[in-house]
Image (cartoon, rainbow, N blue to C red; front, side, top):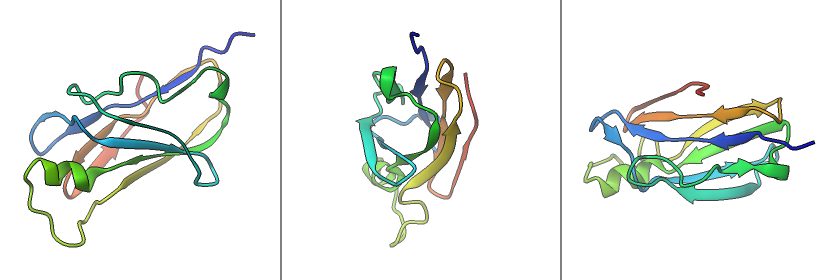
Length: 117
């Protein structure tokens, strides 16, 4: 059976009202092990799904976003320690034939997410 499921993400900067390019993204399994990593492009998206094919399996996962480093590169003066250094979104995958899209909207002091399409 061909598995068509995939996991994608994108990051939007709500402070500057623009896509967040250059954000490091790490995908971890349920044990906290990093299993994939990438960096967002100028459109705030990854160039390819961060999980797909045979690796796309049901389970608990977490996406970790390097928010603090991103905002420092954008010239934002953050306190030490930053309020949001790394944003972690924990979620579950239950179907292997579905597109899971987990976007992140960030500012230095807040974030939100949703199950996109």
